[in-house]
Length: 93
Image 1 (cartoon, rainbow, N blue to C red):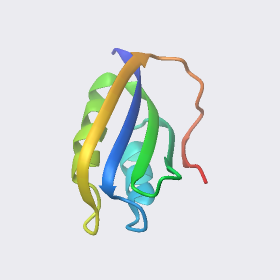
Image 2 (image 1 turned 30 degrees about the horizontal axis):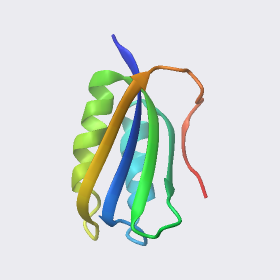
Image 3 (image 1 turned 60 degrees about the vertical axis):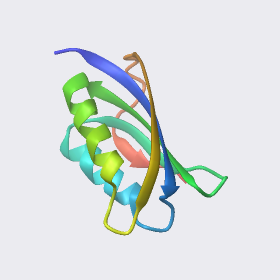
Image 4 (image 1 turned 90 degrees about the vertical axis):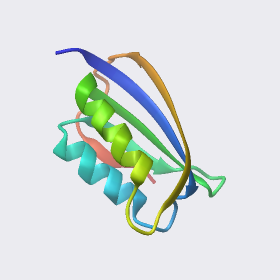
């Protein structure tokens, strides 16, 4: 079971549409740890997550879709080595 670290930026109409709650719910159900937060530019959400690589790939597929009111335009992913720095998945403000 390969562990990995994933950094994702999701661009589009992704703030004010429950995107962070959506991401947190999916990540927790997949057993992942990390965080999601809005970026200050107003048109992007950042996700940092760790766990099983297959589960992280499932998270990316869901982030590309987003919650019903979201309009995802672009998703950037960056993979790196697992660090073990997170103890749960939470929303950061």
